Image (tube, rainbow over all chains, first blue to last red; front, side, top):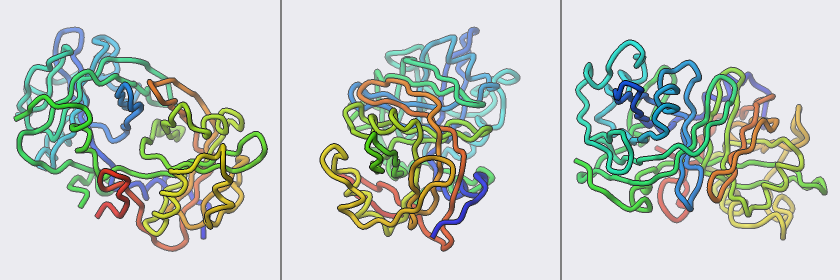
Length: 167
Length: 167
């Protein structure tokens, strides 16, 4: 049976929710990572992926400047990096300089991929749509990478940025 | 370490992936459910949610006709319903007539909610964006519901529409 509920209560049934780290270079060339839970695949052929980024976040400037971004699936071992990248602003700090998280140059876009991630997807910006307090960016996947070792993907498993494996 | 990979291989690291059932009435008033894995929250304030629907799917007609839709989080007990709703076309069948899945009228939009779901979100259509072979629909959540009993959310846990709990 269903009962009407506040959205803030009803949405607490969403866990586990996937975590990605989106990375785009700003106008100074600094690669800026941000941790996001609001992401999905948007097209199968050609492959496209979507992310929702808060309008006030620095990543909006970086993505709209560079017109491309990486979507990385962090591994469970990367929980601390995900928390750091999700709680600092690229306006104030160079996140990759302050938190040790190995990167490699992307192959098809001007960005980086995360060496220790489960997978990385290089995307070129296809569209930007306003949605309330966020922008939805859709990117076309132009190059994909996977880890050479088996790794488990990181999820948010409960409120308060509780991170871990889904199972 | 990363190695370049085909997208079709790299994206297999996405599991578990959330499952939702989106429901919209067509021009004849028939409520048409479709099972989707490509969905995300798109805004916090006001709350909005996004779904990607294949351009060829009947649900596109229903959503663009009624300008509203429900997003239900099916429970693990609803795996058979999710498979049925995801493998039939509303062009050919009345899915709710052919598969027993209790519904209740929505409160704020002209749709239904799923009685046995973990949660239901009534959405009014805010935008539609083409993305390759899909449309991304963003809806504003205008009413939310949760199950009166505790239930586990359904996920796709592996290729080939393998459904189950995330943990």
